[in-house]
Amino acid sequence: MRDLLVAAGVPEGAILLETRSSTTWENIAEARALCPELQEVLLVSDGYHLPRARLIARAQGLVARGEAASTEGLSPRQKRRAVLREAAAFLKTGWQILRRG
Image (cartoon, rainbow, N blue to C red; front, side, top):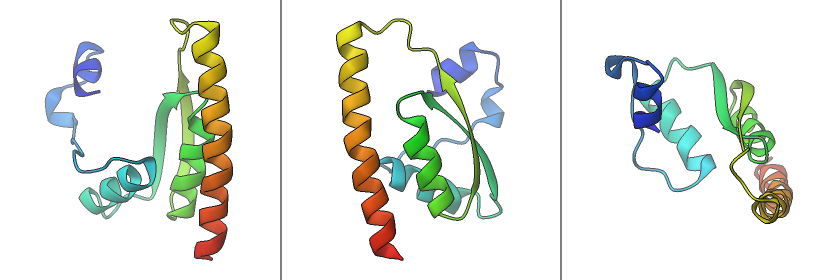
């Protein structure tokens, strides 16, 4: 991701890497730990993952907006798989959030 940002013209000094997480929940929590003053975020992900990422960010107390990246390079099979995976993950995440109260 860092390389993509730099290639798009973002100065390296403006990029803060979070390297500890292995899930979206952990990624957002770790980003909040790196930037405790963080209150609002713009999430960039594929359109399949973005609704769940926004749900997670909101569950962690952030104001979250999203921008979907292009998925034009994916085959129809890859797109179907991504939609199915995220649908199941969205339900699981929603259940986990409800259980946390």
